[in-house]
Image 1 (cartoon, helix red, strand yellow):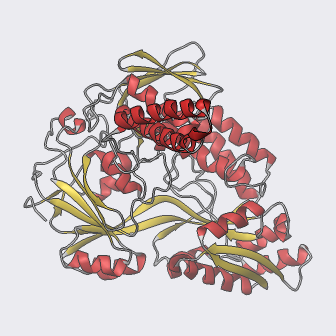
Image 2: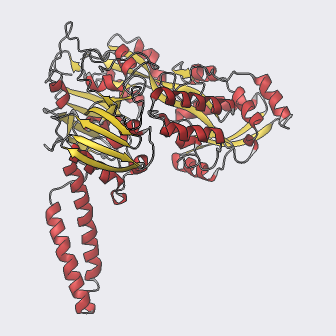
Image 3: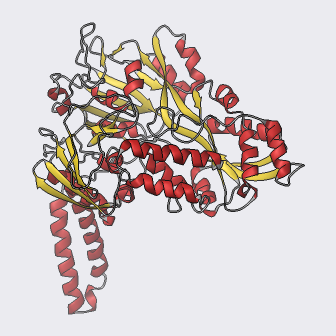
Length: 584
Protein backbone atom coordinates (compact mmCIF):
# COMPACT_ATOMS: atom_id res chain seq x y z
CA UNK A 1 0.00 0.00 0.00
CA UNK A 2 2.07 2.94 -1.26
CA UNK A 3 0.93 6.21 0.22
CA UNK A 4 -0.47 8.79 -2.16
CA UNK A 5 -2.18 12.07 -1.48
CA UNK A 6 -5.63 11.91 -3.07
CA UNK A 7 -7.31 14.81 -1.37
CA UNK A 8 -8.65 15.18 2.13
CA UNK A 9 -11.44 12.65 1.81
CA UNK A 10 -9.41 10.10 -0.11
CA UNK A 11 -7.03 7.45 1.18
CA UNK A 12 -4.28 9.43 2.88
CA UNK A 13 -1.63 8.61 5.42
CA UNK A 14 -3.72 9.32 8.47
CA UNK A 15 -6.94 8.55 6.67
CA UNK A 16 -5.81 4.95 6.37
CA UNK A 17 -6.08 4.60 10.12
CA UNK A 18 -9.50 3.01 10.00
CA UNK A 19 -9.29 1.06 13.21
CA UNK A 20 -10.62 -2.48 13.12
CA UNK A 21 -10.34 -4.14 16.51
CA UNK A 22 -7.79 -6.99 16.46
CA UNK A 23 -6.80 -6.13 12.86
CA UNK A 24 -3.40 -4.47 12.38
CA UNK A 25 -3.27 -1.70 9.78
CA UNK A 26 0.30 -0.67 9.00
CA UNK A 27 1.27 2.68 7.52
CA UNK A 28 4.34 2.02 5.33
CA UNK A 29 7.54 4.02 5.11
CA UNK A 30 7.40 6.91 2.66
CA UNK A 31 11.13 6.59 1.92
CA UNK A 32 11.01 10.07 0.36
CA UNK A 33 9.63 8.52 -2.80
CA UNK A 34 8.38 10.61 -5.67
CA UNK A 35 4.89 9.34 -4.87
CA UNK A 36 4.90 12.04 -2.20
CA UNK A 37 4.17 15.42 -3.86
CA UNK A 38 6.59 17.23 -1.53
CA UNK A 39 9.47 14.80 -2.13
CA UNK A 40 10.94 16.72 -5.09
CA UNK A 41 14.48 18.11 -5.20
CA UNK A 42 14.98 19.53 -8.69
CA UNK A 43 18.44 21.11 -8.82
CA UNK A 44 18.69 21.16 -12.62
CA UNK A 45 18.40 24.97 -12.81
CA UNK A 46 20.39 25.89 -9.72
CA UNK A 47 22.49 23.52 -7.66
CA UNK A 48 23.04 24.02 -3.92
CA UNK A 49 26.28 25.63 -2.76
CA UNK A 50 27.87 24.93 0.61
CA UNK A 51 29.06 27.70 2.91
CA UNK A 52 28.31 30.84 4.91
CA UNK A 53 26.35 31.67 8.04
CA UNK A 54 22.67 32.40 7.48
CA UNK A 55 21.71 35.45 9.54
CA UNK A 56 18.29 36.29 10.92
CA UNK A 57 16.82 38.50 13.65
CA UNK A 58 14.37 37.71 16.43
CA UNK A 59 12.17 40.06 18.41
CA UNK A 60 12.87 38.15 21.64
CA UNK A 61 15.45 35.77 23.02
CA UNK A 62 14.43 32.13 22.59
CA UNK A 63 14.30 31.58 26.36
CA UNK A 64 14.82 27.98 27.52
CA UNK A 65 16.19 25.50 25.00
CA UNK A 66 14.39 22.40 26.25
CA UNK A 67 11.01 22.57 24.46
CA UNK A 68 9.31 20.88 27.43
CA UNK A 69 10.27 23.69 29.80
CA UNK A 70 8.81 27.19 29.92
CA UNK A 71 9.26 29.85 28.69
CA UNK A 72 10.07 29.13 25.06
CA UNK A 73 9.71 32.38 23.12
CA UNK A 74 10.85 31.33 19.65
CA UNK A 75 9.89 27.90 18.33
CA UNK A 76 11.79 28.47 15.07
CA UNK A 77 15.00 28.53 17.10
CA UNK A 78 13.93 25.33 18.87
CA UNK A 79 13.70 23.79 15.38
CA UNK A 80 17.41 24.52 14.87
CA UNK A 81 18.24 21.68 17.25
CA UNK A 82 15.29 19.33 17.46
CA UNK A 83 13.23 17.25 15.07
CA UNK A 84 9.92 15.56 15.83
CA UNK A 85 9.11 11.88 15.48
CA UNK A 86 6.25 12.88 13.15
CA UNK A 87 5.61 16.19 11.43
CA UNK A 88 2.64 17.63 9.54
CA UNK A 89 1.74 18.05 5.89
CA UNK A 90 -0.03 20.86 4.07
CA UNK A 91 -3.37 20.10 5.75
CA UNK A 92 -1.79 19.69 9.23
CA UNK A 93 -2.08 15.91 9.22
CA UNK A 94 0.73 13.94 10.91
CA UNK A 95 3.11 12.15 8.54
CA UNK A 96 6.32 10.15 9.16
CA UNK A 97 9.65 11.86 9.69
CA UNK A 98 11.83 9.93 12.15
CA UNK A 99 9.29 7.09 12.07
CA UNK A 100 8.93 4.53 9.31
CA UNK A 101 5.46 3.19 10.05
CA UNK A 102 2.82 2.60 12.68
CA UNK A 103 -0.06 0.21 13.21
CA UNK A 104 -2.99 -0.16 15.61
CA UNK A 105 -3.49 -3.82 16.61
CA UNK A 106 -6.36 -2.69 18.86
CA UNK A 107 -7.98 0.54 20.04
CA UNK A 108 -5.58 1.02 22.98
CA UNK A 109 -2.28 0.08 21.34
CA UNK A 110 -0.01 1.58 18.70
CA UNK A 111 3.08 -0.19 17.34
CA UNK A 112 5.60 2.24 15.89
CA UNK A 113 8.64 1.37 13.76
CA UNK A 114 11.46 3.93 14.02
CA UNK A 115 13.82 4.96 11.26
CA UNK A 116 17.33 3.55 11.59
CA UNK A 117 20.63 5.42 11.29
CA UNK A 118 19.68 8.59 13.20
CA UNK A 119 22.01 9.87 15.92
CA UNK A 120 21.79 12.71 18.40
CA UNK A 121 24.36 15.50 18.48
CA UNK A 122 26.20 13.69 21.29
CA UNK A 123 26.45 10.45 19.28
CA UNK A 124 23.66 8.61 21.11
CA UNK A 125 21.41 6.42 18.96
CA UNK A 126 17.85 7.41 18.21
CA UNK A 127 16.09 4.15 19.01
CA UNK A 128 13.24 2.65 21.03
CA UNK A 129 15.12 2.98 24.33
CA UNK A 130 15.67 6.69 23.66
CA UNK A 131 11.99 7.26 22.86
CA UNK A 132 10.88 5.38 25.98
CA UNK A 133 13.26 7.32 28.22
CA UNK A 134 12.10 10.65 26.80
CA UNK A 135 8.39 9.93 27.29
CA UNK A 136 8.99 8.57 30.80
CA UNK A 137 11.03 11.70 31.55
CA UNK A 138 8.20 13.96 30.39
CA UNK A 139 5.64 12.00 32.40
CA UNK A 140 7.72 12.26 35.60
CA UNK A 141 6.35 15.27 37.45
CA UNK A 142 9.74 15.95 39.08
CA UNK A 143 11.18 16.98 35.70
CA UNK A 144 8.84 19.95 35.33
CA UNK A 145 7.72 19.31 31.74
CA UNK A 146 4.78 21.56 30.91
CA UNK A 147 3.99 19.14 28.05
CA UNK A 148 3.28 16.34 30.57
CA UNK A 149 -0.48 17.05 30.50
CA UNK A 150 -0.54 16.55 26.73
CA UNK A 151 0.53 12.91 27.01
CA UNK A 152 -1.57 12.03 30.06
CA UNK A 153 -3.49 9.34 28.08
CA UNK A 154 -0.27 7.36 27.57
CA UNK A 155 -0.34 4.39 29.95
CA UNK A 156 3.09 3.13 29.03
CA UNK A 157 5.87 2.87 26.44
CA UNK A 158 7.46 -0.52 25.85
CA UNK A 159 10.61 -1.41 23.89
CA UNK A 160 9.70 -4.29 21.56
CA UNK A 161 13.09 -4.34 19.86
CA UNK A 162 15.80 -1.75 19.11
CA UNK A 163 13.66 0.17 16.62
CA UNK A 164 10.11 -0.80 17.60
CA UNK A 165 8.05 0.99 20.25
CA UNK A 166 4.75 -0.21 21.69
CA UNK A 167 2.49 2.57 23.01
CA UNK A 168 -0.45 1.71 25.25
CA UNK A 169 -3.20 4.14 26.17
CA UNK A 170 -5.56 4.48 29.12
CA UNK A 171 -8.44 5.09 26.72
CA UNK A 172 -9.03 5.52 22.99
CA UNK A 173 -6.96 8.49 21.91
CA UNK A 174 -7.20 9.67 18.32
CA UNK A 175 -5.08 12.76 18.97
CA UNK A 176 -1.99 10.64 19.76
CA UNK A 177 -0.29 11.08 16.39
CA UNK A 178 -1.03 14.80 16.35
CA UNK A 179 0.43 15.21 19.84
CA UNK A 180 3.57 13.29 18.93
CA UNK A 181 3.87 15.58 15.91
CA UNK A 182 4.08 18.42 18.44
CA UNK A 183 6.18 19.35 21.49
CA UNK A 184 6.34 15.94 23.27
CA UNK A 185 7.71 14.46 20.03
CA UNK A 186 10.80 16.68 19.81
CA UNK A 187 13.61 14.10 20.01
CA UNK A 188 16.02 14.89 22.87
CA UNK A 189 19.13 12.85 23.65
CA UNK A 190 18.50 10.41 26.52
CA UNK A 191 22.03 11.14 27.77
CA UNK A 192 21.21 14.85 28.01
CA UNK A 193 17.96 14.12 29.85
CA UNK A 194 19.76 11.77 32.24
CA UNK A 195 22.23 14.57 32.82
CA UNK A 196 19.34 16.87 33.66
CA UNK A 197 18.08 14.42 36.26
CA UNK A 198 21.56 14.01 37.75
CA UNK A 199 22.10 17.79 37.96
CA UNK A 200 18.76 18.19 39.73
CA UNK A 201 19.58 15.38 42.17
CA UNK A 202 23.02 16.87 42.86
CA UNK A 203 21.56 20.31 43.52
CA UNK A 204 18.99 18.92 45.95
CA UNK A 205 21.63 16.83 47.72
CA UNK A 206 23.90 19.86 48.18
CA UNK A 207 21.03 21.89 49.65
CA UNK A 208 20.04 19.04 51.97
CA UNK A 209 23.61 18.62 53.20
CA UNK A 210 23.86 22.37 53.86
CA UNK A 211 20.72 22.24 56.03
CA UNK A 212 21.93 19.22 57.99
CA UNK A 213 25.33 20.80 58.52
CA UNK A 214 23.73 23.51 60.64
CA UNK A 215 22.29 20.80 62.91
CA UNK A 216 25.37 18.53 63.04
CA UNK A 217 26.69 19.96 66.28
CA UNK A 218 23.55 18.98 68.18
CA UNK A 219 24.54 15.36 68.61
CA UNK A 220 26.02 12.19 67.15
CA UNK A 221 22.82 11.25 65.31
CA UNK A 222 22.65 14.64 63.58
CA UNK A 223 26.36 14.49 62.77
CA UNK A 224 26.03 11.09 61.08
CA UNK A 225 23.01 12.29 59.10
CA UNK A 226 25.02 15.27 57.87
CA UNK A 227 28.06 13.15 56.97
CA UNK A 228 25.88 10.72 55.01
CA UNK A 229 24.13 13.58 53.18
CA UNK A 230 27.43 15.29 52.42
CA UNK A 231 28.94 12.07 51.06
CA UNK A 232 25.97 11.68 48.71
CA UNK A 233 26.20 15.33 47.69
CA UNK A 234 29.93 14.96 46.92
CA UNK A 235 29.31 11.77 44.93
CA UNK A 236 26.51 13.30 42.83
CA UNK A 237 28.44 16.55 42.32
CA UNK A 238 31.41 14.55 41.01
CA UNK A 239 29.15 12.60 38.63
CA UNK A 240 27.49 15.81 37.43
CA UNK A 241 30.76 17.66 36.85
CA UNK A 242 30.88 19.18 33.38
CA UNK A 243 27.21 18.51 32.62
CA UNK A 244 24.86 21.27 31.50
CA UNK A 245 21.09 21.54 31.81
CA UNK A 246 19.09 20.94 28.64
CA UNK A 247 17.61 24.40 29.15
CA UNK A 248 20.96 25.86 28.08
CA UNK A 249 22.54 22.99 26.10
CA UNK A 250 20.11 21.50 23.55
CA UNK A 251 21.03 18.04 22.29
CA UNK A 252 18.75 16.87 19.50
CA UNK A 253 19.07 15.29 16.06
CA UNK A 254 18.44 18.43 14.00
CA UNK A 255 20.39 20.31 11.34
CA UNK A 256 22.22 22.59 13.77
CA UNK A 257 24.39 22.27 16.89
CA UNK A 258 24.76 25.04 19.47
CA UNK A 259 28.03 26.93 18.95
CA UNK A 260 27.71 30.10 21.05
CA UNK A 261 25.01 32.04 22.83
CA UNK A 262 24.65 35.38 24.58
CA UNK A 263 21.12 35.38 26.06
CA UNK A 264 19.25 38.50 25.02
CA UNK A 265 21.81 39.25 22.31
CA UNK A 266 22.36 36.36 19.88
CA UNK A 267 22.45 32.61 19.36
CA UNK A 268 24.92 31.01 16.96
CA UNK A 269 24.76 27.44 15.67
CA UNK A 270 26.94 25.33 13.42
CA UNK A 271 26.11 22.73 10.80
CA UNK A 272 25.41 19.18 11.98
CA UNK A 273 27.69 17.12 9.67
CA UNK A 274 25.85 13.94 10.64
CA UNK A 275 22.34 15.10 9.80
CA UNK A 276 20.61 11.92 8.75
CA UNK A 277 17.95 13.22 6.37
CA UNK A 278 20.18 14.64 3.64
CA UNK A 279 22.18 11.44 3.55
CA UNK A 280 19.00 9.34 3.36
CA UNK A 281 17.87 11.02 0.13
CA UNK A 282 21.27 11.30 -1.57
CA UNK A 283 22.02 14.93 -0.66
CA UNK A 284 24.67 14.59 2.07
CA UNK A 285 25.62 18.28 1.88
CA UNK A 286 22.34 19.19 3.60
CA UNK A 287 22.20 21.54 5.42
CA UNK A 288 24.09 23.80 3.05
CA UNK A 289 25.02 26.70 5.33
CA UNK A 290 28.01 26.40 7.65
CA UNK A 291 25.80 27.71 10.42
CA UNK A 292 23.16 30.19 11.48
CA UNK A 293 23.26 33.36 13.55
CA UNK A 294 20.14 34.89 15.08
CA UNK A 295 20.47 38.34 16.64
CA UNK A 296 17.88 39.85 18.97
CA UNK A 297 16.46 43.01 17.38
CA UNK A 298 13.04 43.89 18.89
CA UNK A 299 12.22 46.76 16.51
CA UNK A 300 10.99 45.54 13.07
CA UNK A 301 12.13 48.80 11.43
CA UNK A 302 15.68 48.16 12.70
CA UNK A 303 15.43 44.57 11.45
CA UNK A 304 14.45 45.85 8.01
CA UNK A 305 17.34 48.33 7.98
CA UNK A 306 19.67 45.40 8.73
CA UNK A 307 18.13 43.35 5.91
CA UNK A 308 18.55 46.16 3.42
CA UNK A 309 22.15 46.78 4.46
CA UNK A 310 23.01 43.08 4.10
CA UNK A 311 23.55 42.41 7.81
CA UNK A 312 20.78 39.79 7.93
CA UNK A 313 19.49 37.56 5.15
CA UNK A 314 15.77 37.25 5.87
CA UNK A 315 13.07 38.40 8.28
CA UNK A 316 9.41 38.13 9.11
CA UNK A 317 8.03 41.53 8.18
CA UNK A 318 5.47 43.52 10.07
CA UNK A 319 2.40 43.85 7.88
CA UNK A 320 2.93 47.60 7.51
CA UNK A 321 6.32 46.94 5.91
CA UNK A 322 5.22 44.59 3.16
CA UNK A 323 4.29 47.09 0.44
CA UNK A 324 7.53 49.03 0.66
CA UNK A 325 9.61 45.84 0.68
CA UNK A 326 7.67 44.38 -2.26
CA UNK A 327 8.90 47.34 -4.35
CA UNK A 328 12.55 46.86 -3.33
CA UNK A 329 14.43 45.29 -6.25
CA UNK A 330 17.14 43.97 -3.93
CA UNK A 331 14.74 41.87 -1.86
CA UNK A 332 12.15 39.15 -2.41
CA UNK A 333 8.90 39.49 -0.45
CA UNK A 334 6.20 36.86 0.15
CA UNK A 335 2.92 36.44 2.01
CA UNK A 336 1.85 33.06 3.36
CA UNK A 337 -0.94 31.58 5.51
CA UNK A 338 -0.29 30.82 9.17
CA UNK A 339 -2.33 28.38 11.29
CA UNK A 340 -3.43 30.98 13.87
CA UNK A 341 -6.98 32.24 14.44
CA UNK A 342 -7.64 35.73 15.80
CA UNK A 343 -10.88 35.78 17.77
CA UNK A 344 -12.82 37.29 20.67
CA UNK A 345 -14.06 35.36 23.70
CA UNK A 346 -17.52 35.54 25.26
CA UNK A 347 -18.25 34.89 28.94
CA UNK A 348 -21.26 32.57 28.77
CA UNK A 349 -21.49 32.03 32.52
CA UNK A 350 -22.37 35.52 33.77
CA UNK A 351 -23.16 38.98 32.46
CA UNK A 352 -25.03 40.07 29.35
CA UNK A 353 -23.22 37.65 27.03
CA UNK A 354 -25.06 34.72 28.64
CA UNK A 355 -27.83 35.72 26.22
CA UNK A 356 -27.22 34.42 22.68
CA UNK A 357 -28.98 37.52 21.32
CA UNK A 358 -26.28 39.72 22.86
CA UNK A 359 -23.51 37.50 21.48
CA UNK A 360 -25.14 37.64 18.05
CA UNK A 361 -25.52 41.41 18.28
CA UNK A 362 -21.84 41.86 19.10
CA UNK A 363 -20.70 39.42 16.42
CA UNK A 364 -22.83 41.00 13.67
CA UNK A 365 -21.58 44.46 14.67
CA UNK A 366 -17.99 43.53 13.74
CA UNK A 367 -16.96 44.14 10.15
CA UNK A 368 -14.32 41.44 9.82
CA UNK A 369 -13.33 42.33 6.28
CA UNK A 370 -12.81 45.95 7.27
CA UNK A 371 -10.63 44.80 10.18
CA UNK A 372 -8.43 42.72 7.88
CA UNK A 373 -8.11 45.53 5.35
CA UNK A 374 -7.79 48.38 7.81
CA UNK A 375 -5.65 46.92 10.59
CA UNK A 376 -3.92 43.97 8.90
CA UNK A 377 -3.16 45.62 5.54
CA UNK A 378 -5.26 42.94 3.85
CA UNK A 379 -3.09 40.13 5.24
CA UNK A 380 -5.66 37.81 6.78
CA UNK A 381 -8.36 35.36 5.73
CA UNK A 382 -11.78 36.31 7.13
CA UNK A 383 -12.71 33.48 9.51
CA UNK A 384 -15.97 31.62 9.85
CA UNK A 385 -15.08 29.43 12.83
CA UNK A 386 -11.91 28.26 14.58
CA UNK A 387 -10.00 25.90 12.27
CA UNK A 388 -8.20 27.63 9.37
CA UNK A 389 -9.53 27.09 5.87
CA UNK A 390 -6.52 24.93 4.92
CA UNK A 391 -6.86 22.63 7.96
CA UNK A 392 -8.37 19.16 7.51
CA UNK A 393 -10.81 19.77 10.40
CA UNK A 394 -12.24 22.99 8.90
CA UNK A 395 -15.93 22.92 7.91
CA UNK A 396 -16.09 24.57 4.45
CA UNK A 397 -19.88 24.91 4.60
CA UNK A 398 -19.80 27.68 7.22
CA UNK A 399 -19.48 31.28 6.10
CA UNK A 400 -18.13 34.25 8.11
CA UNK A 401 -20.73 36.01 10.25
CA UNK A 402 -22.29 38.79 8.20
CA UNK A 403 -21.65 42.41 9.14
CA UNK A 404 -25.16 43.74 9.86
CA UNK A 405 -25.38 46.63 12.36
CA UNK A 406 -29.14 46.98 11.92
CA UNK A 407 -29.62 43.36 12.90
CA UNK A 408 -27.39 44.01 15.93
CA UNK A 409 -29.62 46.85 17.10
CA UNK A 410 -32.73 44.70 16.61
CA UNK A 411 -31.21 41.82 18.61
CA UNK A 412 -30.21 44.16 21.43
CA UNK A 413 -33.76 45.47 21.68
CA UNK A 414 -35.11 41.92 21.78
CA UNK A 415 -32.64 41.11 24.57
CA UNK A 416 -33.93 44.04 26.63
CA UNK A 417 -31.35 46.65 25.69
CA UNK A 418 -33.20 49.04 23.32
CA UNK A 419 -30.89 51.89 24.32
CA UNK A 420 -27.72 49.83 24.13
CA UNK A 421 -25.57 48.30 26.87
CA UNK A 422 -22.09 48.28 28.38
CA UNK A 423 -19.80 45.24 28.29
CA UNK A 424 -16.42 44.91 29.97
CA UNK A 425 -13.33 43.29 28.59
CA UNK A 426 -9.58 43.18 28.03
CA UNK A 427 -7.06 43.04 25.18
CA UNK A 428 -3.30 42.52 25.01
CA UNK A 429 -1.34 45.75 25.29
CA UNK A 430 0.83 45.57 22.21
CA UNK A 431 0.62 48.10 19.34
CA UNK A 432 -0.75 45.70 16.72
CA UNK A 433 -3.55 44.39 18.94
CA UNK A 434 -4.36 47.88 20.18
CA UNK A 435 -5.05 48.95 16.59
CA UNK A 436 -7.79 46.41 16.08
CA UNK A 437 -9.01 46.88 19.65
CA UNK A 438 -9.82 50.49 18.82
CA UNK A 439 -11.42 49.48 15.51
CA UNK A 440 -13.71 46.92 17.22
CA UNK A 441 -14.61 49.41 19.94
CA UNK A 442 -15.69 51.93 17.27
CA UNK A 443 -17.78 49.29 15.47
CA UNK A 444 -19.57 48.38 18.71
CA UNK A 445 -20.16 52.08 19.48
CA UNK A 446 -22.16 52.35 16.24
CA UNK A 447 -24.75 49.92 17.57
CA UNK A 448 -24.81 51.48 21.07
CA UNK A 449 -22.58 48.90 22.72
CA UNK A 450 -20.09 50.57 25.02
CA UNK A 451 -17.09 48.25 25.31
CA UNK A 452 -15.12 49.18 28.41
CA UNK A 453 -11.87 47.53 27.35
CA UNK A 454 -8.57 47.54 29.21
CA UNK A 455 -5.20 46.94 27.55
CA UNK A 456 -3.31 44.52 29.82
CA UNK A 457 -0.19 42.38 29.84
CA UNK A 458 -0.47 38.61 29.49
CA UNK A 459 -0.24 37.97 33.25
CA UNK A 460 -3.11 40.34 34.05
CA UNK A 461 -5.16 38.86 31.20
CA UNK A 462 -4.61 35.38 32.60
CA UNK A 463 -6.04 36.52 35.94
CA UNK A 464 -9.12 38.05 34.25
CA UNK A 465 -9.72 34.84 32.35
CA UNK A 466 -9.34 32.61 35.41
CA UNK A 467 -11.69 34.79 37.48
CA UNK A 468 -14.17 35.35 34.60
CA UNK A 469 -13.82 39.10 35.10
CA UNK A 470 -14.92 40.06 31.60
CA UNK A 471 -17.85 39.91 29.23
CA UNK A 472 -16.04 40.15 25.90
CA UNK A 473 -12.25 39.92 25.52
CA UNK A 474 -9.36 38.83 23.36
CA UNK A 475 -9.10 35.17 22.43
CA UNK A 476 -8.01 33.00 19.53
CA UNK A 477 -5.37 30.27 19.27
CA UNK A 478 -1.90 29.92 17.75
CA UNK A 479 -0.26 26.90 16.11
CA UNK A 480 -3.35 24.84 15.33
CA UNK A 481 -2.27 21.25 14.65
CA UNK A 482 -4.33 18.41 16.09
CA UNK A 483 -7.86 19.79 16.38
CA UNK A 484 -8.43 18.43 19.87
CA UNK A 485 -5.90 20.78 21.47
CA UNK A 486 -7.87 23.94 20.71
CA UNK A 487 -11.30 22.32 21.03
CA UNK A 488 -10.52 20.96 24.49
CA UNK A 489 -8.53 23.99 25.56
CA UNK A 490 -11.34 26.45 24.85
CA UNK A 491 -14.63 24.54 25.02
CA UNK A 492 -14.28 21.51 27.31
CA UNK A 493 -14.91 22.10 31.05
CA UNK A 494 -11.44 20.69 31.84
CA UNK A 495 -9.75 22.75 29.14
CA UNK A 496 -6.84 24.90 30.22
CA UNK A 497 -8.42 28.12 28.93
CA UNK A 498 -12.09 27.55 29.72
CA UNK A 499 -12.32 28.30 33.44
CA UNK A 500 -16.08 27.61 33.36
CA UNK A 501 -16.93 30.30 30.84
CA UNK A 502 -18.32 27.86 28.22
CA UNK A 503 -20.46 24.76 28.85
CA UNK A 504 -21.99 23.75 25.52
CA UNK A 505 -23.20 20.17 26.13
CA UNK A 506 -23.42 19.19 22.47
CA UNK A 507 -19.95 20.61 21.81
CA UNK A 508 -18.54 18.69 24.77
CA UNK A 509 -20.03 15.43 23.45
CA UNK A 510 -18.40 16.05 20.07
CA UNK A 511 -15.04 16.94 21.63
CA UNK A 512 -15.05 13.63 23.53
CA UNK A 513 -16.07 11.75 20.38
CA UNK A 514 -13.29 13.44 18.40
CA UNK A 515 -10.70 12.29 20.92
CA UNK A 516 -11.68 8.65 20.35
CA UNK A 517 -12.28 8.37 16.61
CA UNK A 518 -9.12 7.27 14.78
CA UNK A 519 -10.67 7.03 11.30
CA UNK A 520 -9.75 10.41 9.78
CA UNK A 521 -12.84 10.64 7.59
CA UNK A 522 -15.16 9.97 10.54
CA UNK A 523 -13.10 12.21 12.80
CA UNK A 524 -13.21 15.01 10.25
CA UNK A 525 -17.02 14.84 10.20
CA UNK A 526 -17.05 15.13 14.00
CA UNK A 527 -15.04 18.35 13.89
CA UNK A 528 -17.17 19.71 11.05
CA UNK A 529 -20.20 19.14 13.28
CA UNK A 530 -18.37 20.66 16.28
CA UNK A 531 -17.63 23.82 14.30
CA UNK A 532 -21.28 23.98 13.22
CA UNK A 533 -22.51 23.66 16.83
CA UNK A 534 -20.15 26.39 18.04
CA UNK A 535 -20.99 28.60 15.06
CA UNK A 536 -24.75 28.35 15.56
CA UNK A 537 -24.41 29.15 19.27
CA UNK A 538 -22.15 32.15 18.61
CA UNK A 539 -19.78 30.58 21.11
CA UNK A 540 -17.10 33.11 20.21
CA UNK A 541 -16.53 35.81 17.60
CA UNK A 542 -13.92 34.47 15.15
CA UNK A 543 -12.27 37.25 13.15
CA UNK A 544 -9.53 36.06 10.78
CA UNK A 545 -6.97 33.36 10.12
CA UNK A 546 -3.48 34.81 10.02
CA UNK A 547 -1.17 35.52 7.10
CA UNK A 548 2.42 36.64 7.57
CA UNK A 549 4.74 38.49 5.19
CA UNK A 550 8.45 37.70 4.92
CA UNK A 551 11.44 38.97 2.95
CA UNK A 552 14.70 37.45 1.73
CA UNK A 553 17.95 38.70 0.32
CA UNK A 554 18.28 37.83 -3.38
CA UNK A 555 21.41 35.88 -2.52
CA UNK A 556 19.26 33.27 -0.74
CA UNK A 557 18.45 30.41 -3.11
CA UNK A 558 16.30 27.30 -2.87
CA UNK A 559 13.17 28.85 -1.38
CA UNK A 560 10.01 27.82 -3.25
CA UNK A 561 7.10 29.84 -1.88
CA UNK A 562 4.40 27.97 -3.76
CA UNK A 563 5.56 24.58 -2.48
CA UNK A 564 6.15 25.96 1.01
CA UNK A 565 2.56 27.19 1.21
CA UNK A 566 1.22 23.97 -0.25
CA UNK A 567 3.17 21.51 1.96
CA UNK A 568 4.10 23.71 4.93
CA UNK A 569 6.13 22.03 7.69
CA UNK A 570 7.28 18.95 5.82
CA UNK A 571 8.53 21.11 2.93
CA UNK A 572 10.45 23.55 5.11
CA UNK A 573 12.13 20.73 7.07
CA UNK A 574 13.15 18.79 3.97
CA UNK A 575 14.17 21.61 1.60
CA UNK A 576 16.88 23.80 3.18
CA UNK A 577 18.03 26.94 1.37
CA UNK A 578 21.57 28.08 0.50
CA UNK A 579 23.59 31.12 -0.59
CA UNK A 580 24.11 31.39 -4.35
CA UNK A 581 27.81 32.13 -3.91
CA UNK A 582 28.32 30.15 -0.71
CA UNK A 583 28.53 33.25 1.49
CA UNK A 584 26.14 35.96 2.72
